[in-house]
Image 1: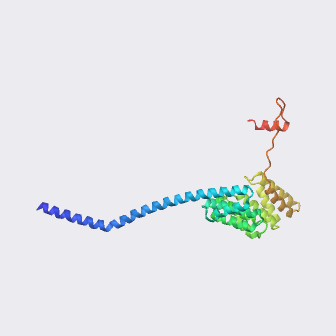
Image 2: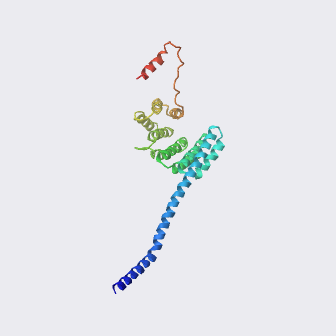
Image 3: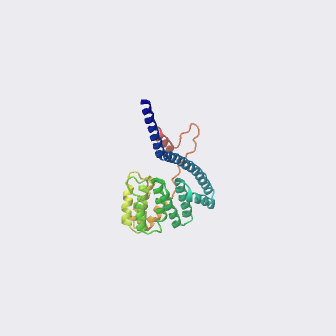
Length: 259
């Protein structure tokens, strides 16, 4: 009798387990399928992204090579392809290159539109703010001052990667707008700010001197021209004959460089 009761209970438990299995098995299967599909999706996206980055790298390098050889049309075509559908980093760089080509062709409005697009596509603040700064600089001679002020103020502040450059550009925009007193104040503050380069400080001091002498309009041209000058070349000295004393200037430089 005991064996019969145990057998009945075992049968009931088996039936209960089978019912539970029929009830929950579809959900378990769906969860496993979702996990597999999710993993395959991530793997597929990473593989696609790697291929896309590789293609964009090759195309961008091709564009840079074409540009360095003077083939602006070929370079623009290569950059345009990346600028439409490349990964965000290369897309940003390609759009900025397209803007550079347009700016070199004296088309500042078109250049600014490419820089603005690059700023929107940028994967980080460093690239994004660089593109937005280039857009403002491209429009410096043509856009109304309120627009330039809005653009540049967005790039100024603690933690902004191009804070000092944006402040200098804003001072130049004030010069362009004939706001000489405000521009002088900005250049004066910039000239004593920690972190400014020697070239930036020299431009600020030159602008202040011209404004003080009543030559505000000239200051615009001088500061803009100075900003485009290449850095001065490192002086070199001919080798001295063996045993001969080097020139005095070179001797002093060598003495200062010697620890």
